[in-house]
Length: 128
Image (tube, rainbow, N blue to C red; front, side):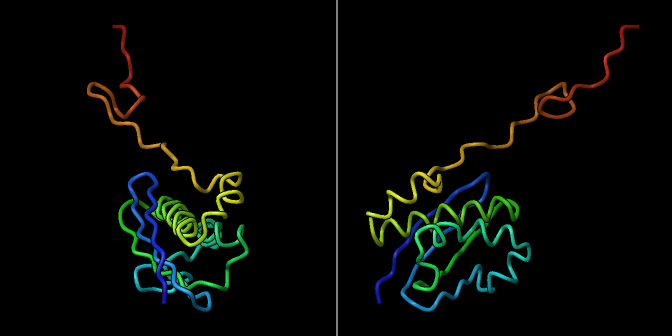
């Protein structure tokens, strides 16, 4: 049984994805995907590369994901699955690239600056 792997990152989340030929079972941190991502939007986002390439029922997906929140984790899983699919068949790049699932989203939380309340919000200014 051949195994294909890919690592995805998004915000502060890191997902290690393994694809094996199977029936379409998806386990995220040893839980079924419906239990780990109860919101349907996150599930759809995480498995988007499989839907685009029409390989939904061909693989069992094993995911280890840590860090960040559910939205960031779903994005990390999406990139990991896309990279694993490329390892399986590099010709899928032609369908994955235009869909934008191979691009690492570089947006991170801006750091808080000293003398300010948050990254950009300031304390109230008093003239007198």
